[in-house]
Length: 212
Image (cartoon, rainbow, N blue to C red; front, side, top):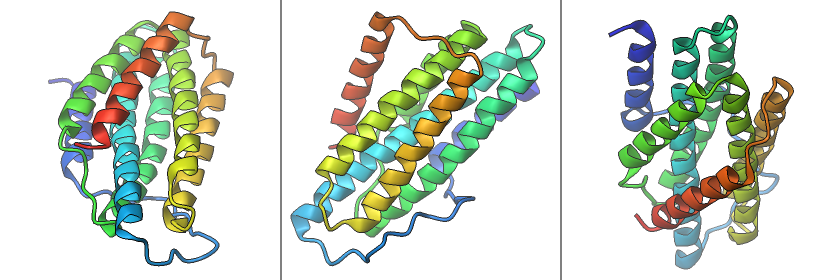
């Protein structure tokens, strides 16, 4: 097995089975979170599980797109792969933050994480094999949709769950930055039907992950 495939396999195993540590400090709320009611805790736990699944998928997408870049014959393949991997490493912070907050809320990761990872990896590989412009355009659209999804969670999270809200706000800001960086690097606008399919797939994932 060549090095790019080993790196992709290692990323999958670490994402799905290892404990995660963030390089950046976890966002600190301006005020401490008071004791939540059972219903509030359950809601926050479910929403953070959904966000955790999103970060599992982000690891798969970036890993697959980096692999596709290295498999291409483009002269800038290595620089593109490194850019995608750098974004993926930043997403590891989100993975660690959501994982820790889930534990604090007495929640658990989605039981379907291996399935989510495999599906996202396949989608990311297809986008990556379509070429640099499409691959980066896929990053732009994905991150914009994720940003909108996170903003909707700020409307749904209990108002007094300051810890979860601080994490979600920082994640949304980071996703917006990743989208801007990918667009500046040459990402194209994906066709409207593709955007619609991406939104539909995300809806299925978030609905199922909220419960399972």
